[in-house]
Amino acid sequence: MPEEFARYPSLRGRVVLVTGGASGIGACMVEQFAAQGARTAFLDIDTINGERVAAETGALFLRCDLRDIPALRLAVAEVARSLGPIGVLVNNAARDDRHGWETVEPDDWDERMHTNLRHQFFCAQAVAPMMQAARQGSILFFGSVSWMKAQGGMPAYTTAKSAVHGLARGLARDLGPFGIRCNVVVPGWVFTERQEQLWATPEAVGATLERQCLKEKLYPPDLARMVLWLAADDSRMVTAQSFVVDGGAI
Image 1 (cartoon, rainbow, N blue to C red):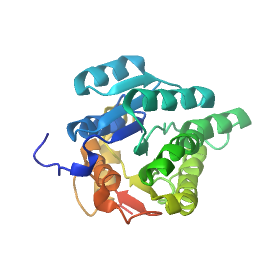
Image 2: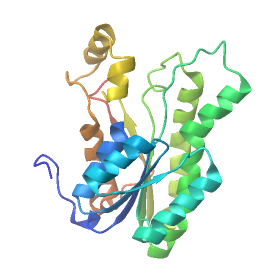
Image 3: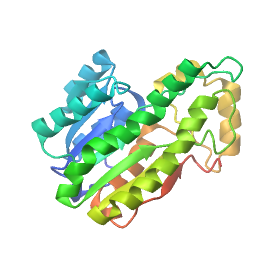
Image 4: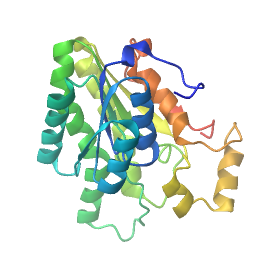
């Protein structure tokens, strides 16, 4: 395990499920949970990268299109059969595809809700009974600073991501009596391979660093550190909160 990562004894042996774990931030979280000794599983539609991450980490990979709710439910059940009741859910999967408001059609809108919001609820719904039985659990939702800073160019995405906060806070109230915590991790601009390839022009990077208090790029391990703490018992009395990891940009 990298020396700069804290070790959380409560994560050893705990069953953790990460969505969107085949690349980017999700792959980093799979790696770090596995390094903590957690029994780690992840879901993703990307078979090639999913199998690679599984081979590198020893985590259980199940291919799943999270837009397909019956398939999602079957995959969650398979994780529980293979590894045991799920104690941590990390709702990471999303796609921040750009789209102009002028061209969005109803099917486009629904597709982006299914990709960025809907599965976060149904994954939580699927794991909650296991956590209720255990009288503890941590469900982490992934938001975005995009709507907080009034970013344009992707209205359906920013709508979905803003809704994540309401979802998490409502479920925190409903599930709190069972010892289940619900929190939101809010990334700033994290420089994954996808971001570097598609949008990280020198001008855009420079503007981002100018806004940040900390003048360094964010990388997936910076998010994984927050996620590990919120998953572990160290944060046992933390729920219904949002944690922005953006270098102080907003």
